[in-house]
Length: 483
Image (cartoon, rainbow, N blue to C red; front, top):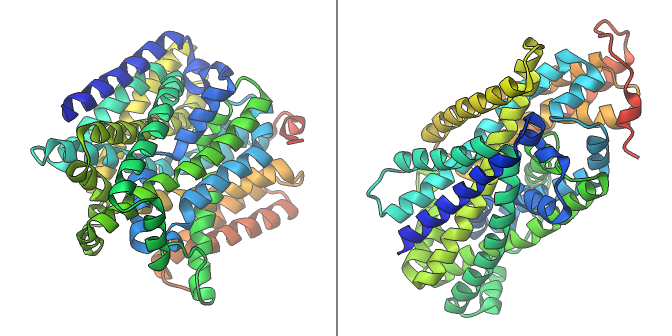
């Protein structure tokens, strides 16, 4: 019954994606849904940007193990990223009428900066997308009772999500997100209610978490404790701003006001509901203390089994259906966007400049081919990784933090930012980060913070010194005004 319900739900989701393909008449529909989404759909797509496998399985398990102090990146950094985008970036993004965030770098700095940043951002999606595919595989693995291997289940999950994303693009993402958000909210609340009741009630679970120090958020001590904590928060809060999935969901709104409100309300909804799976995970530890044995496993992914195992062993069938329906909704909604985003960026900003005469129909076909290829690349990454989803996502956003954030922010808010400044910033940030990550990973100053500082200095020095690297471009500064 449970497996049948999950399969039926999966087929229904794919059907929505295939139906959405009827709205795709060209690349603009495929990439940003024709910029026509009303607030309620736009809010759902923004909420679903990150409410996926990491939030439900990995962040919740990390909280059960380390408490709030162990999860500064998500939900705290993730929610603040959406707030920052709503306040500082959404208007500028929407007014420029762009298909991808890579288009911003081309309009502001030129084709070379567009190419470098697009490659860096695309590469960062390998970890993020792989985390979602790993989660899909984990769900199917648990449901199969071990009759299939985890890797086989990852392949099945990748095939399912790629089918409907391939068919409907951003329209498929938007329509499935709307349906899946409802399932997530209802499913998670009902499961939290029944599991909390088994653990002795909401107040008992919260008091136990407080007594065990799980609700202590800020680190205790000096710089040795504070710097890694701040770095983890900044990696998600700032490093996820120059990301295509967030960009395409914000700019899919029907107008500028909807783009701002969708990002703000979506961030608030995400922050609130991110705590629901944390509550369920800690209630699981209260009900079954032996789950803490998973914390010591050599395979870090094992800790992510806490919620699925509890639901299967301790709840009635209807609760299992609701939980796995909500879990699949969360994963599918995030995974579809995670596949579409790098596909859009790589095709539009890396390949298209070399194909200036390509028509829109052929470009749409190229988008779908690249989506398949990126899915295969993410699969290889997922099948060979032993990290938790939380760790995979953290690593992904380090790339954009050091290599794309500073040129983006300077390009909008600093009129003196130049192409040379952007190039020096990108190279300085990436080189310093990689050097520190390789040789000084345990240093007091986290590598990504060292890279971010280098990127800021690189932008200032590169922009204010004689300009040896320039590119003649049309003047478009008026489109960059965020006011």
